[in-house]
Amino acid sequence: MSADSKQPQQPPPSPDDGRAATGTTAIAPLLLRNARLTDGRMVDVRLGGGRIEAVGTAGSLSAVGARVDLSGYLLLPAPAEPHAHADTALTADLTSPTDPSRPTGPTSPVPYGTEEVQRRATEAALLQLGHGATALRAHVRIGDLHGLGPLEAVLQARRSLRGLAELTTVAVPRLLTGVAGADGLATLRDAVAMGAAAVGGRPDLDPDPTGYVELVLDLANEYGRPVDLHTDGDDPVRLARLAAMAGGLRAGVTVGPCAGLRRLPAETARRTADRLAAAGVSVIALPQGGCAAAGTRGTAPVRLLRAAGVRVAAGGGALRDVCNPVGRGDPLEAAYLLASLDGVAEAAAYGAVSADARAAMGLPEVRVEAGFPAELLAVRGARLAGVLSQAYSRIVVHRGRVVARTSAVREYCDPAAALDLPRQTRPDRPDRPDSTGPGGPGAVRS
Image (tube, rainbow, N blue to C red):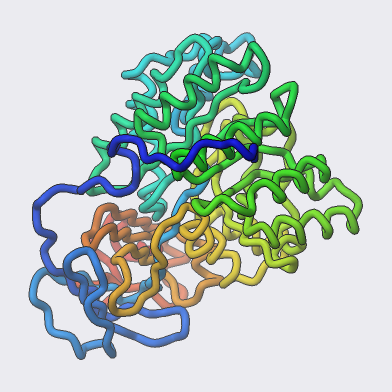
């Protein structure tokens, strides 16, 4: 960071600075009954004012307002999505059928006007909310032909989602250095003034990656914004330089997807991880595949980074765009892949999409304990391993109220229904199997 950088300034309050009010309507109290925690306890959880008011043994808390019976569900802190691409989400089917590899964005045939981007960003956020992500950080490309239009669209989506999910944005310019980058730097400043919550970018694509990072860090320091950079992480010298410059940024620095770290020699990767840990730089891995800014597939070496003390969060990356046409944007799938492919323990894998993701995004910690924010996810199942394996039915709580439900019913033919197997029951009829839903006798709610 340059020695003559300006003193920190705060831009005018914006709708995307993480402090905007969510409205004056009071949230009614809510009692979650008969929930199972990861330690095996069965509890009641009372919510009020957007926070957890009390946690007690099942049946011990009285209901002041509405009640939700979570019998058969595991109750967890809600996950967060630290690496979404709201402006390009859901565009895979819109690319030219004769050239499906063409990228989306300002120079593509995909509709990229403000209304189209706002609609896609809103739909994508709701899909991810249904999976359980009550907070999302969206990387939005700025500059080129459409300037700040995509950012304006995602900020409008943020406002329309208020009360359902917390959507914040990262401004991502293409070039920043040299004569060609002058416009990009000016646009980045405008993006921060407009309401971008974090300063981002893709230094790997700039002719001067180190200079690019210096400019981003200087601007972030000036405005008190966090930094969230796209990088493949295959250049240890560049990452070491980033770590050296990032140490003094109080708002925090995040990099990802860093799949290139896995391709480095083991000792080089370890030294690089040590430098990132010492500087407090967080890494966002993308277990589900690449994203709009990653030229290669693969996942960051999660276990190596964690062993060095680096905070590693996991994100979804591309959500059904040309970079990953089958991307789901499901935090539980990201955790499943960390556990299945990287050998990360189930609790740590879920932590990567919940506690670690929230910390990397600068959000308050969530625990199922009194006093913590009421950001919760209930998933049908008894143990975390089973939930990561088959997380079908989900109930999502944001700021103390249920904002999304997903219910799955699995059906078998008559011979299977006759087998003497355990049946899951409906919360409102715990005395008998669910025989009134679709499929009649033999239907099993998953």
